[in-house]
Length: 187
Image (tube, rainbow, N blue to C red; front, side):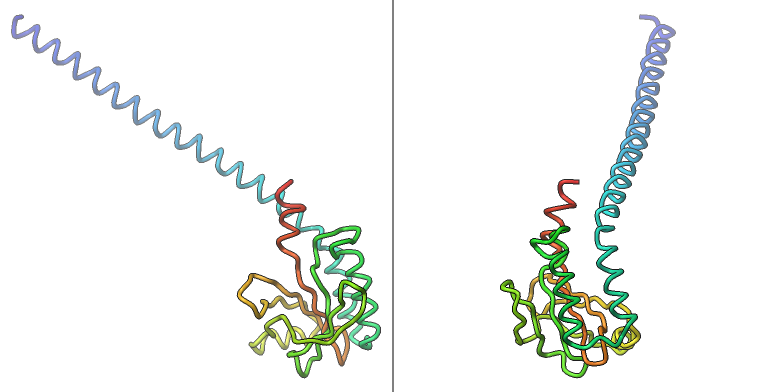
């Protein structure tokens, strides 16, 4: 072919290549934007669902705040209140899977806890939670705030502490595994 025809064919091939590259980058950026929007939508839906399920704890937290606000409960009154909460939010409660166990610790020595057994009898034993070590957490606990702490063992157990009276700290083990299996996964 003539030199002018070769140049024309080369320009056409070059133009097609440039159009192809531009389409590729446009398609790629469009796909990324679409996937990003879908990702945000899924994350938003999951977050809203999990948040809605965690609202199941609201009545339990309200009850604990009332117990802390009174601040004058005797150990026997604390036992009664915790037995009721365990009956509502424990494994066989009307809203099961929120609380694994309940107990009472002394503000002075948190190395021992009186724990409600599955048989309904309160028994004294070694604490299963790691007392909050920093002064800020202890000040919050003394002021009636709820404080989270970890378990002593290597598991990921979580405990919720609240000052129930001058001589008692209410201890609730949060049943994260059962809560997740019962409420979060199905939702």
